Image (cartoon, rainbow over all chains, first blue to last red; front, top):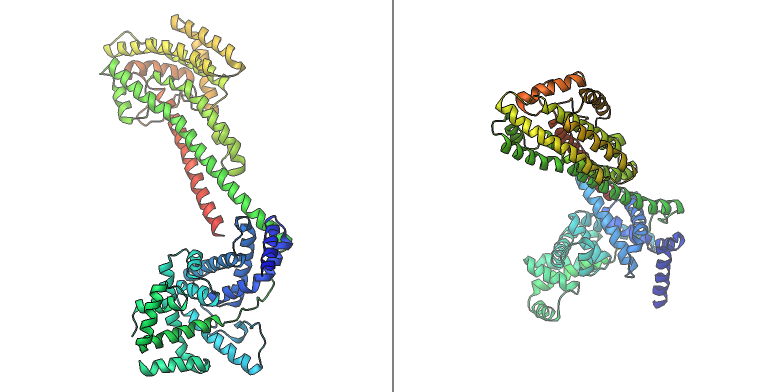
Length: 205
Length: 352
C-alpha cells in the first residue's frame, strides 16, 4: 500500500512536470471511477463519458495546483464539479429524453461477471436503484452518491460541493430516506434481506 | 413517524458522523424505541445497497493524446494573457481620457472666476459657468502646455498594448500631435489671437474690459508657450523656444498684420486636417448651437473673431476645451467598452 502511494506520488510529480505518459498512467488507473461517478450523477452513458473526459483534461490543466493530497479524491472532485455544471446546464436547457426509462444499451456493464441469471437480476436491481437516484434533486443526488457510492466523509463532500457540513448532512438524510421509499416500488427486485426489513417496517407503521 | 431531526441523527449514525456522546444517547434510544430501530435498519440497508453498486467500466479510454495535452496547456495561457492585457488597455484608455479632460475642467473654473472678477456684465462668463466644463476665453490656453505631454504619454502606452489586445484603430488614439509642431502651432495661434483681441478695445465699457483681459492674455500667451517648451524633453527644445519667445514678444509690442494673417491662414488648415484638440485645430470650428456658423476661411475667422470679441467677449477657444472634453469622453467610452468586452470574454472563457 505504501509502495503504491509512493509510486503514485512519483507519477503525479512526473505528470506535473508535463509528462503526458505519466498522466495517462493515472488516467487509466482512475478512469472507471471517474466514469462511474459521472454515470451515477448524470444517468447517461455518453454524457458521462464526455464529462469524465473533460474532467481528465481539466485535471491535466490544473495538475500544478495539486498539492500531494489523495489524487483519487482530487480527481473525483473535478468530476463532481463537471457533473454539477452539466446538471445546471440541463436544468437551464432541459432536453426531452427519448427514452425516460433507460434501455438495455444504456445500462453499464458491471466489472465482475456473474452467472447469467444473477447478472440479469443484478442489472435489474442496479437499474432500479439508479432510477431512484435520478429522482432526487441534483444537490441531494450528488451528496448521496459521494457518500454511499464513493464512500466520502461528510467533510470531504462539503468541500467538494462547497457547502456547510450541516447542509450536507441534511441533504444525505433526505436523499437516503427518499431512495428507501422509492425502492419499495421495486420490491420484487430487492435482495431478500432488504425486503424483510422494509416488510417489517410496513407492517408496523 | 420519525421526524427530520431523528432522521438526520440516524443517518449521521450510519455514516459514523456522531460524536461519542451522541452515539451513546442514540444507542440507548434504539434499544428502547422499536420504531426508531426499524427506521434505522431500513436506512442502513439502503446505504449498503447503494454502497454495493459496482464501479462501472468506462466505455472508452480517457487518456490524453499528446495533441490534446498540448492544446489543453496552450488554451489557458492566452485566455489569461488576453484578459489581462485587455483589462490593462481599458484602464489606460480611461486614465488617458481623464488626463485629457482634467486640465480642461480646472481651467474652466479658473477662467470663469477670472472673468467674473474682470467684468460682471460679460455674458459669456455666466454661460461658461452654467456649462461647467465648456470653456470660454483665451486663458484656456494655459491647460495646453500640460495637457498634450500627459496625453501623449498615456496614448503611447495604450497604443503599445492595443495591437495585441483590442480592435481599436490606432488613429483614434492620435490624440496629441508631435510636440515640436504643437508648440509652434499653439504659440503662433496665441500670438495672433492676442493681437486680434487687442484691436477692438476702444468703444464701450464692455469692450474695454474685454481689452483688459486680452492685454493680460497676450502676456499669458507669451509666457505659456515658453513654459511649455521648458517642460518638453528632447532636442526640439531650443529652436521652438526661441521662436515662440521672439514671436510672442514682437506681437505683444506691435506685430505687423501680415505676419498674423499668414499665420492664421496656415494654422487652421493644419489643425483641421489633423483633427487634434489644440487651440489651432479647433480655431474655426465652434460646435455649440448658440455659436456662429463655421467660417469658411481663416481670414474670415479673424474678422469674425474681432467683431465677436467686441460684442460678446470671447468665443473661439471654447472649442478647444470642448474638443479636449469630447476626446476625453471618447477615450473613456472606448475604455469602458473594452472593459465590458474584456469582462464578457473572461466570463465566457471561464465557463468553457
